[in-house]
Length: 195
Image (cartoon, rainbow, N blue to C red; front, side):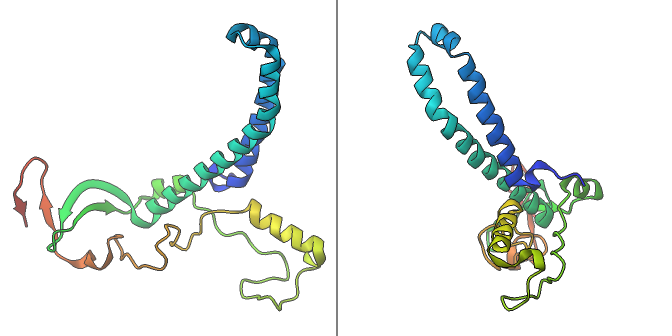
């Protein structure tokens, strides 16, 4: 199964951290040329590399994971609210909203929102803390496996509440209870309202 890098943020971030680690080693391999070109002492370049070999991969991991999660949130927003059409409407109470249209089949296929993964044998979504875990998931090692699985498969929740607003019902077009209210179109370049 093909997975977009943004849909596997931890794996993508680990890959970028390894590339950054190798990049620092690659640059340090030419430290004499860098020192000569930038007119910096060789030992200064070496000291910078000693710090960068730890700092750069960590920063690459953090930045890449944040980018992937942000792209997931963008995809989820498109999936929930549709594509902005560029038409601004004014509500009777003076609020301005932008109209959206639902995604077509081609756009939905490009998003490729992943289905939730199946749970290991012997578990169900309704199992609570009192449920008997699968044989491979028992004991301390099983808890470590479960925690690592949770970290590696971290993703934006697909329940529609990933924007930090909680369980707010935004209606079918994402604009709250005003979804059925009459709209007044505002044309670009004029101050007149048309009904």
